[in-house]
Picture 1 (cartoon, helix red, strand yellow):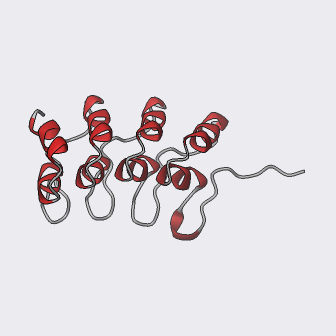
Picture 2: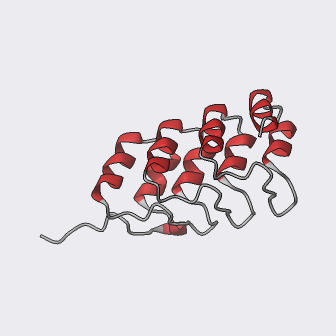
Picture 3: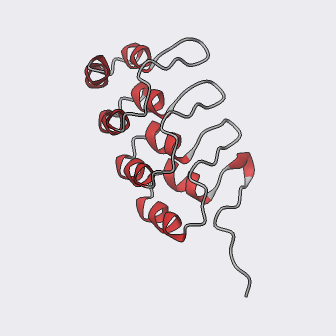
Length: 137
């Protein structure tokens, strides 16, 4: 029997890890990470990493698993200049915003390609709890 490539990319550059992260499948993400054969920093065609996808969708447990690998770029930008922090902020995912800020690696003043910061995005979308967290940084 041949071996399965757990890190293969398919349509739009997605991997099993990125899909598991996007949809919050904590057990799947853990299983894939435990193989040691997945690229935690892989980007899809929009430049989004598994961390970005988990953060923008509010999957706190998956974000923590990815951060715990010590192999993720907390401040990576997609092709629009968005970061995991801005993705979490715009969607009001307070716990994820806190996790990312607590790493010390997320730039709260980072601007996307149209000049919007995570604070601007949170304010624009009336995410009060996230605004309070970002104002403290």
